[in-house]
Amino acid sequence: MTIYDFAKSVVYGVFKPLYRVEVVGRENIPKTGGVLLCSNHINNFDPIIVGMMAPRPVHFMAKEELFKVPVLGKLVPHLNAFPVKRGMSDREALRKGLAVLKDGNVLGLFPEGTRSKTGELGKGLAGAGFFALRTDAQIVPCAVVGPYKAFNKLKVVYGKPIDMSQIKEQKGSAEEATELIMTEIRKLLNENK
Image (cartoon, rainbow, N blue to C red; front, side):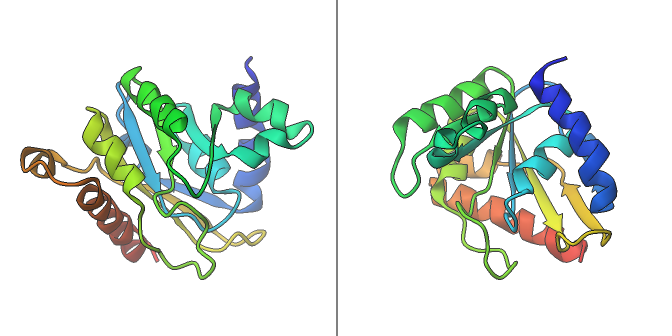
């Protein structure tokens, strides 16, 4: 059993009953091929919940600082995370993200770039659109709905893949692609309040 598999079983054993996690739409994540999984971001636990409830292993960009924390820094790479320098264009992280998708894996992203302080969906950054336009990956929106309060229900909703063909044909910008992704995340949030 890998560290990732062990962590997944711990999350199921602890987080699922603690937050009464309801998962909707797991079947919307394609079983094979590159998938860009884009979610809103309301809590530090989001990567754990979004990633571990998905039917396939998910790779996440994680802030570089986490890799410098004693013990945690050694564990994080085994959980399919790789470092990203925040607040600047990190070419190495972009290359790594593209490789994850081109190798047919799942890349999890929080297009807002940081946690929402209000719980409301913020503006998406161009990074999500960059990955959407530069690869043939399926783009799956995701919404984390509800507060992280013990024994209150938390919902994770994986939406249907987003059709990006029109933006690609019109040679749209990364910003336009991100806006489409954010619109789909917003729809999931509104439908699952």
